[in-house]
Image 1 (cartoon, rainbow over the protein chains, first blue to last red):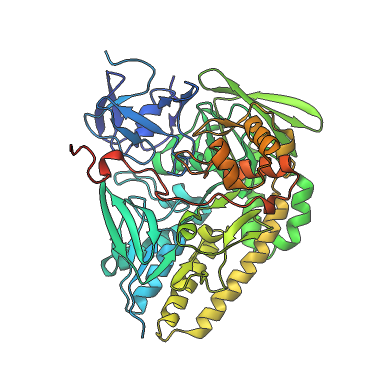
Image 2 (image 1 turned 60 degrees about the vertical axis):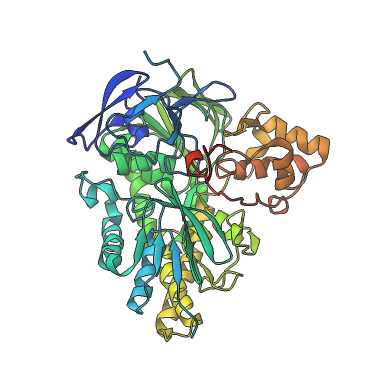
Length: 96
Length: 458
């Protein structure tokens, strides 16, 4: 279930990416946080408790919103814009 | 005359007015900013391709936001503007920066630190659940991305931002399920005389509250937050009010207790700090013009102590004039005096705000041992109390070394305030006695790939 809800600015060009291996569509100008959390309810699982995390400050202070890519990079989701072809993992399911 | 090679860190209201002032005096500063576009957090601009007008984005502040944006647009050809650039270390006349994964260094003779603020956080059980965000985050989602943090949102905590964000969400079409304020109506009445020093700002605050009530948004004052519940995301929030426990369903919570300055850079520079009773925090010392304890370093805006966006503009200009005067350039002394007078009036207003939205100083006493205080390292209140009890730790950096609180990726930006409150309460000391977490480079995490020689075999 998505966390974030789009209220405005929905007439932007689509951007294709994958989330946990599934093809998905975001909008140009979305941060990764927006692209993922309008589709899912987490960005990663905590490395200590395994509990879901979905960011907290969304302004680059708390460092809570890291998300993994399929190639093993970690990106700060609130401050990185979604790009065509990104392959992102929420930690909820392995890529198919 | 001293050589002028000024660098401004931060392109919010303070940094932009500082840059504009230097340009007017024929000086070309470097302006380094972490964001992709200028404006800071308060006047943050959406990415290119977004279409809402400034009136929709900034409400009553649209005129001020536009003026600040235009000021920067007008000088961008006369400054060395470096957006998307994180300063991760500062020492001895050089800033270490990273931009798009590439390291660089920026030398300076003079430095204006205008690093801004973030939400001041006091956790409650369940605060790590997806859907629980800061008030600032809720505002960024809306302003910068056109998104709400949920469909039925509770806003909680205290401070002017609480009512502003609730109003902005309701106006934008989100359902605001409740506004929960830890301060009381009586606090606001008592603060009214001081707040009338800025009657416009005071009137806006009253307007937001009245608007919310008129539109059927339940506003509860004098609450204490108990717990957010949910499995994979927040589904309800429970609070106490007048001895009774109440609960409200929701799918998101935005909360915060006013703002906390981003002082890490001033700390790395070696600026002297002292405890500020009103802001309940150690702040870098500065004179009325913004001069820090280190020659050539100037502090402006909320990053030096919370004064608000209007004051940030004046402080930015004032600091730039001080920088110029210190370098031997002629400046308008009448302007210096009038800026300092405005800032002094702002300080009186801030004292009123602190009375209207007081920090809940009883917070630490009620917190359960199981509450996670540090979300990076998942350190609990119980671990902090145990450490204070068993080791006699009385100082924040000692507590950090022993428990890892504040040692994680955020360096205590999120948990530092709460951890200090817990330590003070557990050790029976005043909050001003427990010290502050020292800043460490890198002040924000660097991507592994940016480090030199990574991946190069022997």
